Image 1: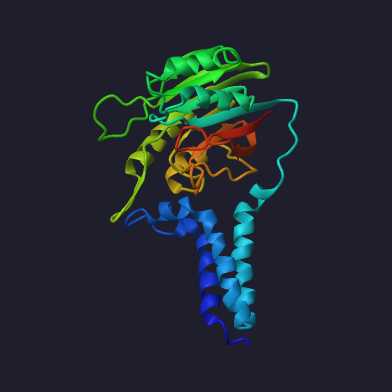
Image 2: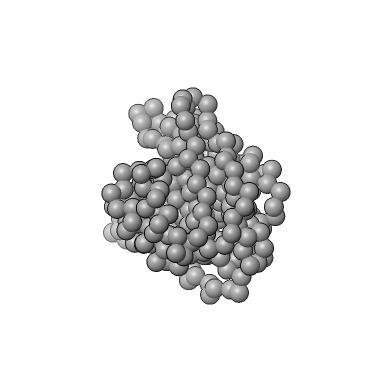
Amino acid sequence: MRTRGRVPAALAVLTAGLLAFHQAVPGSPGRLGSLLETFLPWLGLVVPALLGPALLRRSTTALVALLLPVAAWTYLFGGLLLPAPKPGPHDLLVVQHNVSDENTDPEGTARALAAAGPDVVAVQELVPAALPVYDKTLAPDYPYHAVGGTVGLWSRYPLTGVRPLDIKPQGIAGPWRRGLRTVVHTPHGEIAAYVAHLPSVRIRASGFASSWRDQSAGLLGRALAAEQLKTVILLGDLNGTVHDRGLAPLTSRMNVARRGFAFSFPATLPLARIDQVMARSATVTHIRTLPATGSDHLPVAARIRLR
């Protein structure tokens, strides 16, 4: 029985290795490391796929080997499955959404975002024609707003110090404004809020095309490092997951969600969370998706515990 199921056992060990040591997977050729990290949670599906053959072969070796990917997956993602903590006395609820520049129902989208009852709403792919609709719909509950290019932020609390962020990578011609920074004056202190939309990535025959996204993440990371306010929140369509090494300039400086998977893209069959909420000197205690809107992304709502 110990000699049976060597193939399932070997695949289980390989899966555990990819989970535990994904950062060791080389980035070239084709940025394979980033591609793996984009879909890293889905490696867990290898376990039930191998469990059947292991049981049919009655292989002790394979069954024991399957404990390795189970342990690795649990270490990486098990905490995300825990229940959301109860709201604390100094929580901030935020909503992040790429509303899509092809959205035919901006009013319905704005109402859906406001229905979650957030304190702050951040959006990307905000086109000029839709801006008055979002402003009018959100204004009753969110009288303060800041817009820069195709990104915007609406807030219950006053905003000051609004300025654009230069996160445009080399090689992109023409106007390209996808980032802003502002200060949110909450009852619990000032918070620097960053809204960003990093360049899209593509899976091609040559590999994972993410060089523009990675450059933009580096520029945004430097802006965050230079931020003087202690408490910072980052909301945006970052076109990457928190395990993707391309977002290391951000995840090395910011806290990410401790609870919730919140796969947000594509809306019809969500496979990854590329819409992110991160924080510095604060804790993102939970993140979840909201019902679908007219966008190809799902909105995400996150609760942030302020220190």
